[in-house]
Length: 351
Image 1 (tube, rainbow, N blue to C red):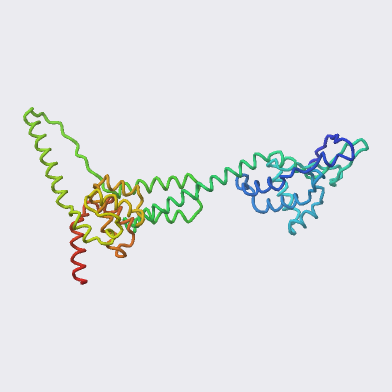
Image 2: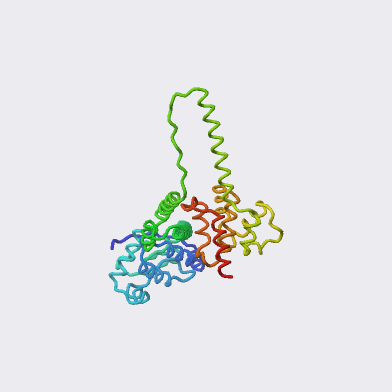
């Protein structure tokens, strides 16, 4: 323990020197900031207990130096040995939170002169107070990071739940759930979200685009090709429309959805608006409904809402099933007319 000589400080008249060396009022606020941000400085709970014991020896108006002996400090901590106390103090000195000022005989005390000069020998906590703004900023940064981690974790869990509804026993879902058992940092959570988003894109229905082959053709062939493309598109649209039920049939079979309507449902526009209102009540996010509308059209998206509501408890997760048949891999197999026929047959059988 090297001896660090103190320079004498003139604190004014003897009557007023206590006011000059008064402890700042936010002393314990700074302590709480360091306690909450201790991981950023490599401090353990034992270090914080030692610092708390040291701060408890300070009295308002008596400066920021601890004069208690090691034995008394160990007793106040809770009976730790002196070697542990020395290690903790050395750690705080290394971090620049405590300054040790030793007297020639290694005792801790303060002496004053008649003209107001004083010498203090002990453990000075003034460096801790000098870094108050740094510690408070570190606490705020750590709290913000923790808040972001909680938010990202909830995002990961929500998307994993959606993936469970689309495809059971997914290997990626099981591996990520194992990773979530340990504490992660923000970057790791973002990496998991990127993997999940990529997997969801792969699970959704992809449209294969044929790569055109460059072949020499004549003008007549180009015209015939355009005419044939228009005919194919027209036939495709007619086949798509043929798979859709009419509004009257849909509302007649799906009575659960129709009962919520405040006005008659006469057109597909009426049905679409009503389905958009029902979707959030079933746990289907507005963004998911909008994406389904873009993917398969308003009529089929609205029909899916009406049908799922009519199926009731036979569908465990409405949101996941809606995603699967309108955006996911089961989109091509979703035929509203066939489902309506199944519903009609089941209701006749039950009657």
